[in-house]
Image (cartoon, rainbow, N blue to C red; front, side, top):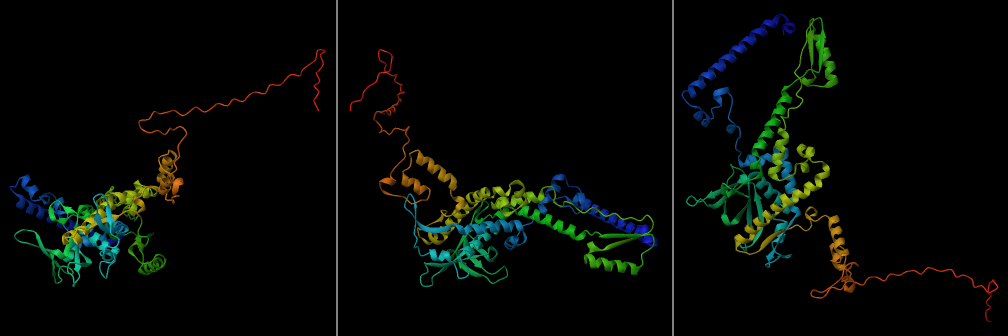
Length: 479
C-alpha cells in the first residue's frame, strides 16, 4: 500500500489501527453483555432461550431464521419465485382440461346430465371469468395459502338457485368464529386488510381446501410445506446478487515507472469508456513505481453451495407434485433427459392432476348441491385426456392378439381399434386357429381327425416288349 499511496501511506496505517481498536472494543462490550445476561444459567436454560448469541455476538438459532408469512405474502410468492410460479402455472393450465360433469349415480355407474342448468354457470361463473380463469384463481389461492374461498351468487327472484361464483383471494377473507363453539359463523370480505369489509353469510360461501391436520377448518398448501426451501432458495439468490453487485474488478491494469498525471488518466479513461462503456467493472487501475503490483480476488466460480439450488428446486417441485423436468429445472434435466418428458407427463397427470380433479369435483359437489339440500353429483371427465389413456400401440397390439386367438369377434376387434363395425353375421365372425377344438362343457372332447397323407406314386419306366427272336415287338394299332 505504501508503494501506491507514497507519502500518504501512514494515513492508511493509522486508519487500520483505529479500525482494529474499535473492533476489539465492540467484541469486549458484547462479551461483557453476554456474561451478564447468562451468568449462572446452565446449558439447558441457554438452549431454551436460544443462547447462540453467547458464542458469537450476531449468531442466531435456526428457529429464529425461518419466518412466518401472512396470506398476502404467500400470494406474492408466485411473483418472486420462478419455481413456485412454474409449478403453479403447470397445474393451473392443466386443470381445465378435465371438464366437470353433473349427474347422478344409479348404483353402479355415473349418468351425466348433459342439459343440467348449472353447466352454463360452470362455463362462465361470473361476468369477469370463464371456467379457465375461475379455476386458475381458485387453485392458485389453495396452492399458495391452503384455502380457496368461493362466494355463491344467488338469483334475486329465486334465492335457492345459484347463478354465479367468485373465487376471492385468501387475504381478502376473514372468518368470523362463534366465540362459544369456535365454529365459523360468517365471513368478512374486503379488498386487502385495510379495506372496508362486508359480511357474507356462511351459506353463501364455500371453501376448497385439503385439510390441515392441526386445524379442522383450515387447509394446508403445497407452499406451506415448501416454505423453508423457498426461503433457502431466496437467500441463495440474494447472496448471488450481493456478490455480483459488490464485487468489482478492473478491466485493465496500467503500470509505468513514473507517476500518472491527471490528463493522462482522463485520456485513457475516455478511450476505455468509448470501447467498453460505463460501469465499475470497466474502469482502469493506474499503478506506478518500480515493483508495484496488484492482486485481485478470484471471481467466484460457483456461488451455488454444494447442491443447495438443486435440493431446493427438487423439494419445492415435490411439494407441488410437478416433475422438475416438466418445468425445465436443472435438477430435472440433469437426472432425466428430455426423452423422458412423456413419461413424466403421464406420471404428473395420473399422480397429481387426477387427485386434484377429484378434489375439485367433491368441493363443487359439496358447495353447490349437498350444502343446498340437493343430491346432484359432480364427476371429472378424463376420457379426452391423452396422457390418461392407454398407449395406442399397446392397445392395437393387444386387440390384434385377442382377435387372432379367437377371443374377439370382428366387430369387437374393430371397435377396440377405433374402426366402424361391419355388423351382421360377418361382424360376429371369429378366427379359430386350426390347433384349437371347440367344445361344450360336459361333452367328450373329440380330437380333430388327422389330415390325410397324400403319397405321390413314383412313375415306373416300362421296359419294351421283345419277341422270341429278340427283336422289338411291333404292336399294330387298329384302325
